[in-house]
Image (cartoon, rainbow, N blue to C red; front, side, top):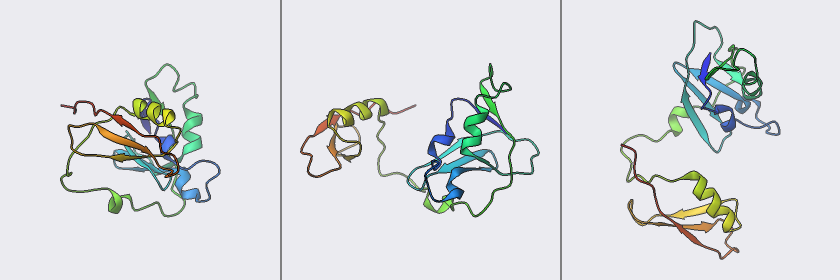
Length: 155
């Protein structure tokens, strides 16, 4: 398997402390790598050879990033192994159809604003795709609030 180093798909997989071992694996299906921790799901492009496996453990992929074969390259190389267990049926949870509207967000700015509001989780209130949106702490006892401007949509 060959994965572009810009994709850190293992960050979406379950961590060491998670109970569900299956979520600690990254599923490789056709030309996609899919990882989830049950709350987030990431799907990124990947290249595979004629391999017998269809998964890699997230920790193994992190280890492969430091492999000498991957050093100096813009890709991470790893060997796949058969998936042990039943992976989440991601196709049923992935949204289909046309979106109601699209908003582009600078994630780094959202993290900064979240920290400024003293909250690790936030609620976003949208009033239009081209208007500022409200950012509220998820904890209702925290009365801080902020606004953020969307960035221009990709072309």
